[in-house]
Figure 1 (spheres, rainbow, N blue to C red):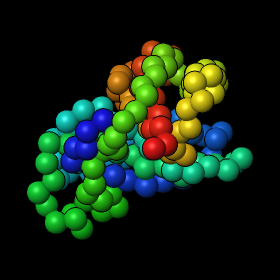
Figure 2: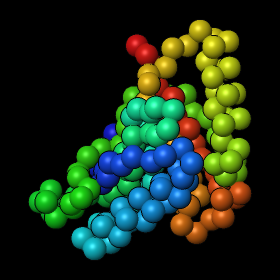
Figure 3: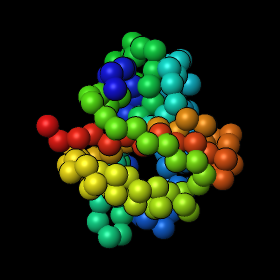
Amino acid sequence: MTARPALVLAGRATWDDLYGTFRRTLEQLNGLARAQGVVAAGPPMIRFLSSTDDQADYEAILPVVALTQPPERYLPARPGTTPAGQTYRFVHFGGYDTMEQTYDEITNFLDERSIQAEDSFVEEYVRDPETTSEVDLATFIYVFPKK
C-alpha cells in the first residue's frame, strides 16, 4: 500500500456495536470532508489499533485528493495519511456478523505460513457502507507482516 493524504478520526467501539459505530464515524468523517470542500479519493478505511475483550480502539480514515486548510479546520478529525507498506490483502463479502469467520481464515493462512503480523490491521470498505446493505458489503482486509 502507498500512503496517500487522508482525514483521520480516532474512536473507540464496543464489539457489540462495532458496525454501527463504524458507520456513524464514517458518516461524521464524510460530513467533515464535505463541509471543508475536501474531495474523497477512495473508499473509507478503519485501522484497528488495539483491543480488549470488550472494545476496540480504531482510526477511521478517508483518503482524499488534498488537504489545504489549517489542521484545526478539520477537527475533531486530523490530517494524516492512509496506511502504507507491504501487506497481505484478503476479501470479505457480507456483513460484520460473518466477519469473524474471515478473520479465522486469515489467522489460519498466516499460521500455516509462519507469518507474524503487526498488531494493527486495516479494513477498506470497497462498497460504500452508507449506501450498501450490510449483507452486500465487500471489505478488503489488509494485514501487515512484521519485518
